[in-house]
Length: 230
Image (cartoon, rainbow, N blue to C red; front, top):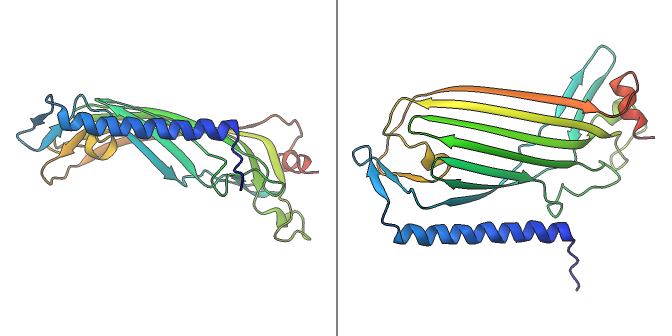
């Protein structure tokens, strides 16, 4: 059996192997590092010279429902799984997310069309304050409720598509902890370790801005989507 791998898939695989290797280096550094120190009277252990790498899979997929006087549209991307790689060092965290095509549900097809999506983010983690910003870009959606517009549509037929529909999602948040003995990096970035069990009250401010655009020019959004499918 011959396994065929595209250049893009090889790049994704190389990135995964690279970051996993960095994680092993971080573990080795942790064992030898003498600059770790105990803070907050023995409640927190800081690892100032040990970077950490997180590799995660998520199904945090953004869908949109448009409810107007004439049209009800359930818009979804042809994506089911995201991979997120995050590197953390001291107070800084940097992450990159994408939807690998070798995962089931992420493969472009003639039924749900093609979706391209990528994301970036970074965070700063101080003693009491944590702030994070992220951006996600997606292009290409399909109409989940196609049967509302094509009564003869059955499961297995192609959905109405909007390949030129683009969403840009900007998110930001800031959180403040009231208990200094609680280590939020132990949960977020693993650059600290909580030595004793403790809790804390958090005050958080969060905001999100989603921009939805399309390159098509028809007057109504319904016409934009249908014109892309015929």
